[in-house]
Image (cartoon, rainbow, N blue to C red; front, side, top):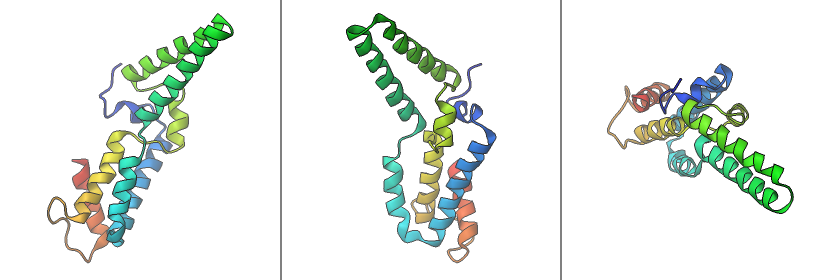
Length: 152
């Protein structure tokens, strides 16, 4: 089964890990609704955050390179490592799952879409897209409106 690009990683992630990631996003937006002076710093942090795809690509290329180097210098059987890694990377591209995915998701690595949800909610709080929510004095409701707008 081939899932959509946005849904494929969360579909292959435990419900608990998905809830934890969603809660982290919501908490960040709520906190920044009450502390808008920190939004610019958080947006910079989000620009530097590695998403799950980047981490998997870095992991796979490192293991493949090590396998090729060991296969060329020590023993040809090491060439099985890059073959296995590239097969798992292909499986991830098609299905959204590979062996390191559950570990990385439990460590908190998020999809680009999840990072963008937080990013656009914070930009909405900052006023980049115009006014939101019922008013600036009701911070939690503004956070809920910003999150809802970011998920559209």
